[in-house]
Length: 270
Image (cartoon, rainbow, N blue to C red):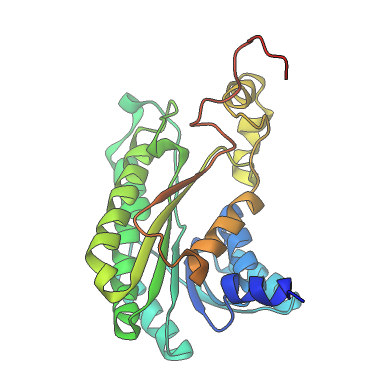
């Protein structure tokens, strides 16, 4: 008799894997990190927000998972190197990297000040570059690794007030492809997961705004906002051996937004 559980575990289990997770204190990051821990991974939670990070760790450990907290400022190269070396020393290997740290400030193109530009670029793009440079040598040594970079709806369709943020996320996608091409010889895979319009504590004002929420829902085929849990499954897939032949891809999790959103009126017998 077929054992479905064993087969699924063999394909998707992250048991024994070590995940370095940046932005782990955020709404999307914490949810994915918890999901990976429940799939068996040992999760090194990294963020600059130590208090929220400890709350995420507590939820994971209370659910029976394994997690550790590491303060990480992705704009500080010395901090990055110290953090990754410490994680490598603690766990002896690093199998998966999830680059989820990111910020945005919604304002018009002509309203962006240079310091805002630099801040968003440093966290969203340069941070991904520097953290990945620190982690990749571990994966090269063990001849295996999976890098998951979190992109955005704005890699394919820009919203107003997202000029710099959109530029960083397009850069993350391009960088992902470079990682995939250059490091395939070491069996290191790199993919980009681009969430659509996700409901988190930070986006509550948008979803409560009558004009903006209608604008978004009109453009989502499934006619609902996404939730962080909608992103978890694809990240577990990309982290697991089930995706051994997927690299250099952008996978959109957007409820059918880029596909065309909700259709106009049309005749159908269905």
